[in-house]
Amino acid sequence: MSTSKNRTKVTRMTLLAMLAAVLVVLAYVNIPMPMGLSITFNMIPVAIAAITMGVPGGAILGGAFGLISFLQCYGICGVSGMGVALVTANPGFGFACLMFVQRFVSRVMVGVLAALVFRGMEKTRAPMYVKGLVTGFSAAFFNTLLFMSLLVILFGQTEFIQNQMAGRSVAAYLLASIGVNAVVEMIVAAVVTGAAGVALKKARMI
Image (cartoon, rainbow, N blue to C red):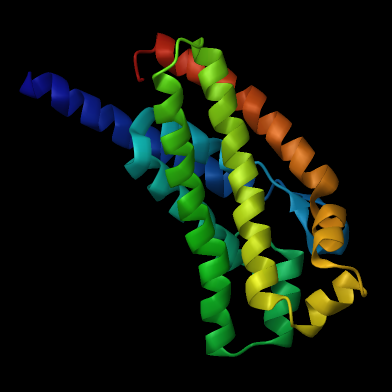
């Protein structure tokens, strides 16, 4: 029993390391969009970790995603157009702390919430593909919801965001900003995570 548990632990740690490596690669695979945002698929490894390792795995990979996102504001591990613009205009330490909260904390919560969604799906009789699909979709949904909500709450009064809003309401700005991005990210995350869930189930890693 002890040997089996150790083997399972090593397997999951290996998977966690592989998913973290995928995150680093995906950090450079962004599709630029208007308003400084981009289409990103980093929530897919987070969703897979949430499926295979529950809340701890989701939180760890979500934290890795958030850390990479924060570093991109300074041109490390790729570049976040919006992040660089905000930091350049507000280079102080206090602003950097707020940026860390927006980018890191929100992504940790994405991993936690995705794991809770999968836990709920496990109580249903839905096929594994559907469970993975819903989890992947929810990860992308929560990523958009938390990231954009904190963006407006923490930085809505900055000159950069005010210029982006151009006199529009918050709701109109959010819809204009995330329309195509969110739809593409949610669809891709749902399809890929669903397929990954089936493969991992066959490999007895779930």
